[in-house]
Length: 142
Image 1 (cartoon, one colour):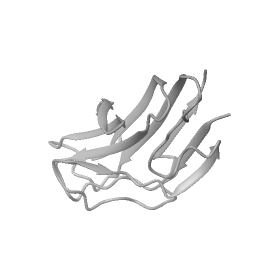
Image 2 (cartoon, one colour):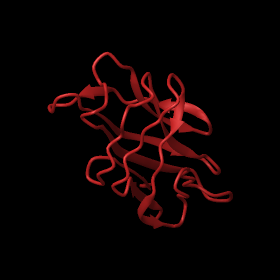
Image 3 (cartoon, helix red, strand yellow):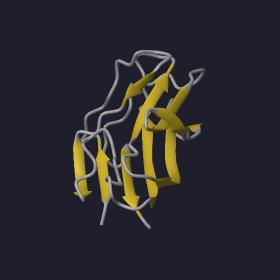
Image 4 (cartoon, one colour):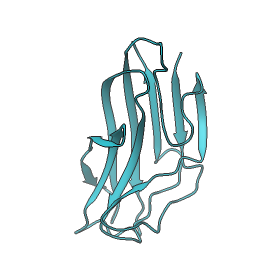
């Protein structure tokens, strides 16, 4: 089995460089079957292994003190350093909150690497640190 799950470990993240893609940190790795996730990159297929179907899931929750109205927020999954999937930001049901969810598949080849980066127009945007609110996972499923 090749799979990982990670979260924020109750550590909110802020102080972004505005208008560029920034690294989202994943300080808590809850599982790492196959040891293919290093806290940033997921490399599901190693040299000599066949191509594999991979699944990604996750969520980034912007806290209530984030200026979500009028901002631009993207949490883009990058593959081999290039943008691959960009889930849509949705305003939350609580005042001044928002969420970006990830649910996608790909055929990974040997050495393909994936990471999830965040773009905001506001340096003081806060990604919630609650493990139930902000998380990232991936798995080889075929």
